[in-house]
Image (tube, rainbow, N blue to C red; front, side, top):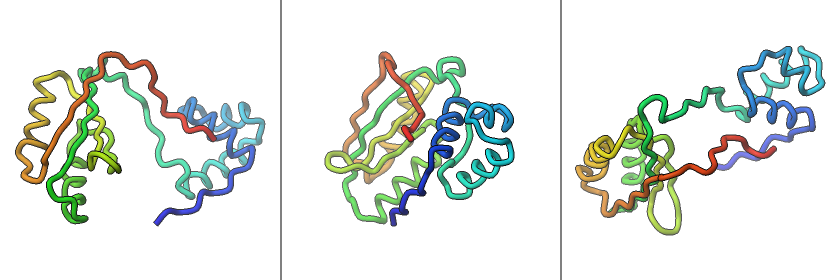
Length: 157
């Protein structure tokens, strides 16, 4: 069930934009940048977290600096698309650290995955583990990034 979006005022939007640019800033720095008092800022951030607008605060790591330089976008089509079989596949990829994102899509393939691995041998091992040995996977199409021209995590608010 899709939940209605929370009503955001201008201060909420400024806070979200500032945190998306740098979530590590102190409440004092955040309040100064959005022109609100520190207690107001703290209360607003807590409300945005409690409402699920802010899901988590993370550090973005450069994949090539930590030995995960190969990005693959993978399309997966299953033989049987029943709800139980789709859930089973989602559970399988959810437990795989190299799978950064998994989307159930329509039309076309059943799933699109974003995968980050060290190199082609690591991708081959992952593909064998997740796709080749999984009886319900009918088709796999993999696309390998040769250059990332844009990477953004910011949502326009």
